[in-house]
Amino acid sequence: MVGRIYHVGLTVSDLERSIAFYRDVLGLEFQGEIFMEECKISNLYNLDETIAKDIFSECEYPWEVLPKIKDFIIKLGESLDKNEYEKIGENVWIAKSAKIAPTAYINGPAIIGKEAEVRHCAFIRGNAIVGQKAVVGNSTELKNVILFNNVQVPHYNYVGDSILGYKSHMGAGSITSNVKSDKKLVIVKNGNEKIETGLKKFGSMVGDNVEVGCGSILNPGSVIGRNSNIYPLSSVRGVVKPNSIYKNQNEIVTKE
Image 1 (cartoon, one colour):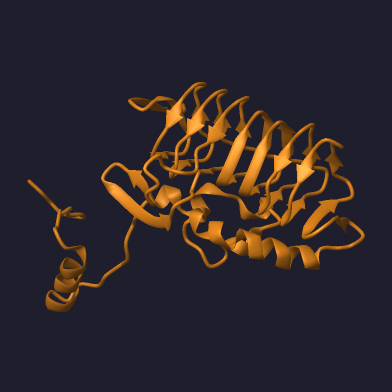
Image 2: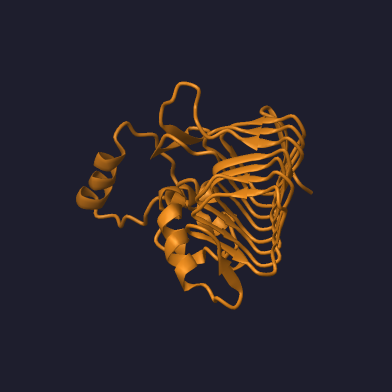
């Protein structure tokens, strides 16, 4: 015997018309969409762990900030405390407590945070925010990125059009791939759910405390949930839920 029904799931061909029917004809109240919750900014990142907190304020999904990074850096850089940051060249601000190798190249706009370390032959192409105590290692390349505090990209990494959350770490040789081979716009996919981003260049959204194994590729539009581990030599597509261990596309387990 069924005592009470709490939820009913329906598959429809036209979502907007269906919402209008249940709202306008049946008089039900629309409560909003629950859509890719694990991909939302609030479920991926601790915004208190980045100098770029304000760029996220009017966005729901993190990739929405990618086209805004350049202008945001220029505006934020001009407001930084001159006792703590030094402006070098055109739109490059480096914390006086940061360590920059003489062989590193930093192109603006860029902000290098307090106590950050930019090592030998690192290449920062521009539109980059490197968080406090973050490490940009030898032969690592950054382009249009936000690295939260304590992020480590220490050995032969490429991070482009991506956001790396607090204390995330990319193993040696792991990269974000930021353009599809067919050059089409990137779509974030999670099972049957899809979000069209409208972006041609979109690498990966990596949540707080994520470990990416050596030699892994985070494909365009990938989203890695908080506290997840990616096995070495993985090719990651789509959305990895938080607290996951990603072994391969068909073997993703939840941490105990």
